[in-house]
Length: 96
Image (cartoon, rainbow, N blue to C red; front, top):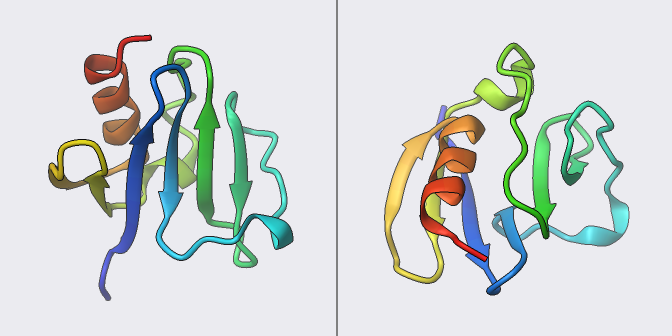
């Protein structure tokens, strides 16, 4: 099965990890994550948003361990990894 594809955006203060072709209006919140977030109809992470530095998430939370393909909009950098990897990338590279 092909990995789901996400973009990582940064607006100077806020950052987001967004599933490509994601639409905000019909998604539910997943309260197990510290950051503002949404899950799709299958209960998988589809959008994570923050205006503060990345919080330390619970590494045992299974939804964070899905392998996905990420593309950083600002630089075009691409990598495959987990949401934890994407959050670590944001923490290391986006300074507010």
